[in-house]
Amino acid sequence: MENSEKKVSTWCIVSMASIPLVMTLGNSMLIPVLPILEKTVGISSFQSSMIITSYSIAAIFLIPIAGYLSDRFGRKIVILPSLILALIGGLIAGFASWKLDNPFAWIIIGRILQGIGASGAFPIILPLVGDLYKDDDEKTSSCLGIIETSNTFGKVISPILGATFASFLWFLPFFSISFFSLISIVLIFFFIKVPHEKEEPKKFKEFLSNSKQTFQEEGKWLSAVFLSGIFVMLILFGTLFFLSEILEKEYELKGIKKGYVLAIPLLMLCIASFITGRKIKGNLYKMKKMMLVCLIALSVSVSMVGIWSDRLWVLLTITSLVGIAIGAMLPVLDALITENIDKEERGTVSSFYSSARFIGVAAGPPIMALVMNNYLNVSYLVAGALGVILTFLVFKFIDVKEIEN
Image (cartoon, rainbow, N blue to C red; front, side):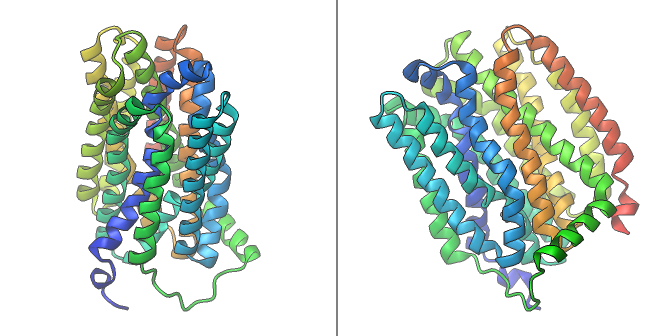
């Protein structure tokens, strides 16, 4: 086996990092545009939240299938057609917004296509990193930190880009998603060299049997990781949707100015993700400790969001703390999955984990649209209580010695 350092070039890492960046831009870039879209198209806050949710629901159901296909036929073969679908979805949503008087239904169709594309792109990167670095946990953790940082960096710049593009044409963000997808397609095609597998890939029955055995043996700690992924993305996208609405309607911050304000907690999330990815270095004890600290910090900070929503700088400070806690958790969750599941089931298990994350993405905006007018404080207090329960589950079910064995 050749040294992994010779195999994994800088451009290969850049190419892999471009996928979470593009997929994040494909979703988060639209959040600051939603209030504009509500006025222009004549839809409610709940309907506008469906533009985020439709993307995520499509991904939830198809990610596990994409994971199996990537295990069966190869990572790159699944990633490239998925990015092409994301490109087509952006064009459909953009042209419908540009040319039709009532574009909402076609925007949703385009977003569903983008969600299908997302299902075969970002989730497949996690097992691909594991394939490229084989058994080198330290390099795997470091690379996953870069991948997750690219994901979170996309969240930082997405409100700024979305607001900037929308200031020229409100539907321009849809077209920009297709442009960014094209760049990622070119990078993946030329620079990612997937290791040649000599073993015959497993057939579907064997795949089902092995996956069932994996979840039976590793089910306790995997359930804690999956629930954590759902929870942090639910909090993140619910809070981003809330911030986008309140900044425009209560604080009268619009356009690029609102994009920069939205980017503040996301920048904190990005920095925390980058630092954590470099520090954990495949150490399971550090990972569990980091998860517990982050969940406690997240539970406390998220409980105060609703209470201080009427003071902008306090609200931004609290949501920045929320961002730091989430950012520090994300590379830990990625590494736990990638480093502790056998290669044969890695694509499938990591795809189920990515699917779980999309449940949180899909649920956050519509739940917030329903509760923010009358039950804002209660909803964030409930979120804090759920965080405490999850902290207990992580403490109980993630047994470091059991995972190592």
